[in-house]
Length: 125
Length: 205
Image 1 (cartoon, rainbow over the protein chains, first blue to last red):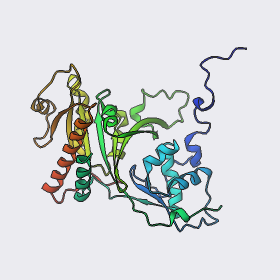
Image 2 (image 1 turned 90 degrees about the vertical axis):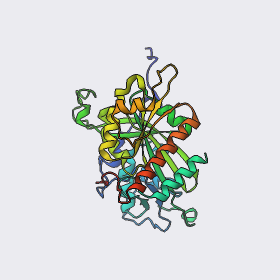
Image 3 (image 1 turned 45 degrees about the horizontal axis):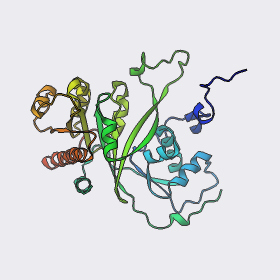
Image 4 (image 1 turned 30 degrees about the vertical axis):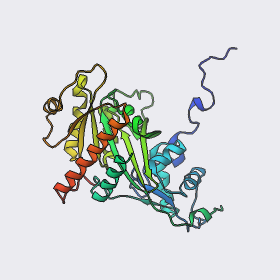
């Protein structure tokens, strides 16, 4: 029997697990609010991992990536996970107190100092 | 489960992040522009299928399917350890508008790329950012061979407000892209300075 040449094997065949299986089907974080795409996530240094915190393998992977502050989009890109999945899992970790999400105020950037810093940095490129 | 905490003890500076949206029609040069000035990173988003996808996404036989995977890129410019700028090319098709809302929250502003051969492709983006009171400018990508128009011609064709900047640039040239981003940030600062109570668009719901 011949094997078709265009047969997808290994990673080419796509994920074995559907993305939202990792969140047990949840598409909205437990808190009901989403972390922004460029919010900064940092693991809590003093978190003791209490027994009632039930972490999956993916929760632990995310946590191990957050020892240095990182953004939601960088996490999703580094771990090759859809942003929506990362947000749900971050919501769990945040509720457990395992990490902190620094959310800038909503709306457009109104912090003139930040804008001037960005302007100076761009001009110096 | 045991965790090492030794590497998390030292005080960390939470870096400031800013984001700029790059909008425009298909083939207007969004990815070229982002790639000319920043490190490109792939991103997967698993998004809710909106009714805009009906008739476009073939969901026959999988009528319980309510999400779809959208692949996109983003650019990252790390200026310093405490300041990073993100550039998001927004998918141009109207059916991705639900993603625009997400991307616009907290953004410095937007660059709307205009291709003078297909100027109508950027009408939707101009409308969107005007409606949201998001600071934006129109950057005309001067492709080889594309007829050059004066910025004022483009302003009239797009019916832009007098204070909306229109700039000509080349999406492939780093210095040219840099000038566009500088012009956008200046414009955003002007908007804020002109109106100290300026609060931008709606807050995250």
